Amino acid sequence: MVRNADHSQPWLGVLSDPKGLNDGLAVYFTEQIAEAHSRTIGEKPHISLEMLGTLPEYRGQGAGGQHVQLGRELAEKYKMLCIVDASPSSAHLCTKLGSREEDIMTIDLSHWGRRRNIYFQSYGLQAAKFGDLI
Image (cartoon, rainbow, N blue to C red):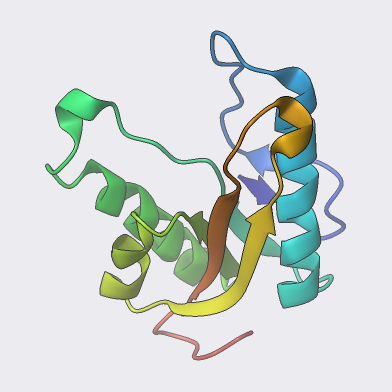
């Protein structure tokens, strides 16, 4: 999702509400990610790649990498920062495309009856044409 300079409205993005979504958990999760992004980039305009996923039957065919690469290309085109959040199992896509780890977060899911926490890492994609912005 790309937000305008004052972060008020997305100007590019697709929003969907997946079947079976736990709204309370989704809101909490999104708030935790927003706090991590705020620590990492502050008020700078940015492109945020959030909650990307690939259907199991298409995994291992490059679809995830294409999503991340598109974010990087948009960052270069609009001279903006690009942040992508990755689980430990998908972090390799970020590092493969030249990004660096900016923040690590643990999201406590015990309130929703989950026994395990979710661990996420935020990565800053460096746009090659204009250097390190973070």
